[in-house]
Length: 377
Image (tube, rainbow, N blue to C red; front, side, top):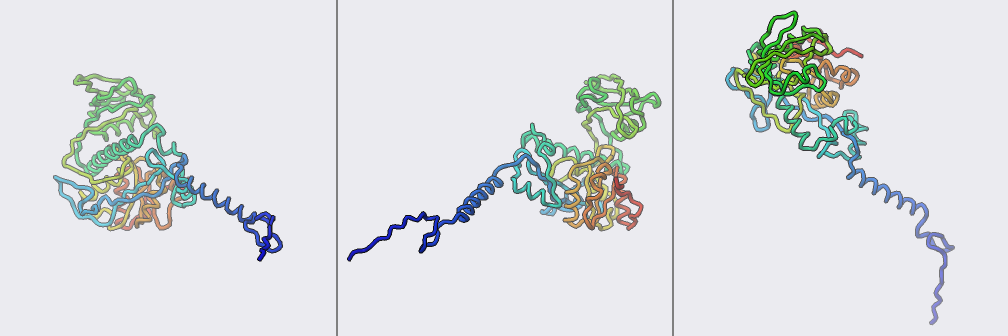
């Protein structure tokens, strides 16, 4: 039997009278689009764009306990008292630096999020630093923050904290550059209006400089390698009508008792305020917060002055997430606070540890109407 084979010359993408198309132009276009989308998805997963993503980090209760039951702050050699409520130090989680790459998907997610900020990488990190250098600097800042917080808290409580002010360096264009040397011990200060004042603490130095007009000639008594000398410095302007020496101090403190901190995986200087308040709460009768959950942030120097920090919007969001009703913010961060306060959070502006203690007392007593808030710009 003969079989007749039909020879179909119709291209597969064109329909003949009795056949359906195998591949339509639409199918081909969809396949190409799918392949391109797949490649772009791979790029988003593995290519790190030049941005840093800042999001709310964890909070830590400075008057609370760690997971294993040990306190975050331990005081030995002085009487401590029970506490209530929480004093939350707040943090920012930042990705995009050396050793902590961020993906394009995370950057896009950050742009779409209401609590995350995306900034150029160089804004958040020094492009010349390695991962190890970033971590080392952050650890040193936390260590310094703990020392400053301890001295500021004990000074606020009226404790005598003898402190030697050792020069760690001078600002390149500061008033003391080329006059003071690393390792110099600052012993005294005098001005045209004041007699010689012994520098027994950083607070004493701060008080004298705050009362000294910028551009004044001050005489510093210095112990340099065991020999006494005097150095005259013409001061810079601190921006508030007082003076700056343009010097970095490495304090050597003699604490009346031991204060230890059990903090891991948190670095930087911004925990100072909440650590200082935690110490004050432990060393004074009655709960400083009145049982309220209060969060906050801010650097603290040896004199108890509260300084500005970064990422305050993320820190406020983290505070609300973890149950805080009140937030202590540095006065110098008010321009970032106004218009960005999450619903349900009351923000109080503070400039010193003393002001923060007063604010907590107001919160505990339910008398908060007169407490300072961030003014609208």
